[in-house]
Image 1 (tube, helix red, strand yellow):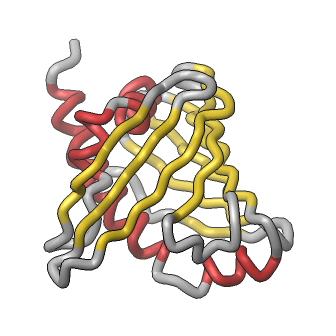
Image 2: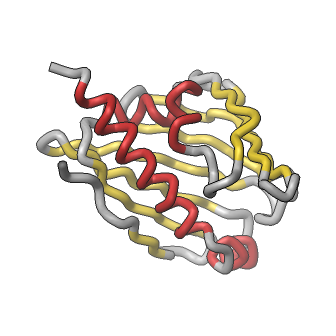
Image 3: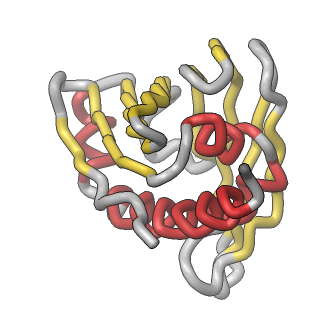
Amino acid sequence: MAFGGPLTVTTPEDTQIVITRQFDAPRHLVFACYTQPALIRRWLNGADGWIMTVCEFDAKVGGKYRYEWKAPSGYVMGMGGVVREIHPVERLVSAEVFDDDWTGGETVSTLIFDEKSGRTTLVNTLNYSSKEARDGALATPMADGMEFGYSKLDTVLAELGKGQA
């Protein structure tokens, strides 16, 4: 069984990070895994030992979302945001803030779901409030954490794909 590939990270502008990842699944399934809480919980559940304690996503313009994770140490990490644009299976734009606000304010995420021959390329453009905020995000293990989650998403997508004609 084929899976997606490792993600790539680029910085085309001083306040921007672009993360690209391929998935061996049609975009409607990848999009569903970003917008349906029952599916989000299956892959965006954090590192080993962490528990996703809150997973809410209202998939409409103006809809709010909230995620919280609890570490084995008891530390709780949370983030929330608002959906700014939603074009089913094509594009999802949201504004997000982490509770600890380590990114220096709101970050705008633009997700593009592009499908060719049953494979989806996901492009996530993250726009930060400043170069310092962007550089702070780059200094974290964000890319490793995202690839960890995307590897889980590969498995979820494979399971979902089995139920399709």
